[in-house]
Amino acid sequence: MTVVYTGGTFDLFHSGHVNLLKRCKEIAGPDGLVVASLNTDDFIWQFKNKKPICSEDERAEVLLSCRYVDRVVMNVGGADSRIAIDQVQPNYIVVGSDWAEKDYYSQMSFDQKWLDERGIGLVYVPYTKTISSSAIRSRMS
Image (cartoon, rainbow, N blue to C red; front, side, top):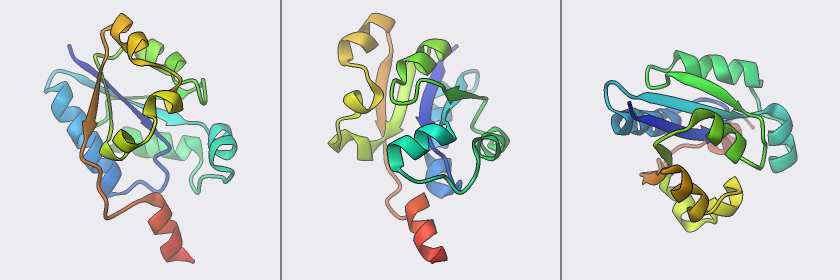
């Protein structure tokens, strides 16, 4: 069985999130699992210096209602995502292509060697440029 891991804040759930999760499910295949690792409220405050609009419990409930998500785990390690990744033991980590231009490895606190030791592939999928939680927030101002 193929297990796909993706992570994020998933605040103000929108079509970009759906596109990412749909691609995760396609990669996992019909019998595979998609596990979404959810950033905690505390970590979001530390990392972004702002609170999410929706609480971690609300965001988890929304993720679980998405047909492309099989399981939600909390990113209990905060900036060190290795803890959640080791808990899930995925075959693939899937992220948006916007991370291809950033230092995703440092952001997640791992390197290619760490992934190789676990047999985990890193897959970039197209980022939906037309929507974001920040863009939605700006519409509400």
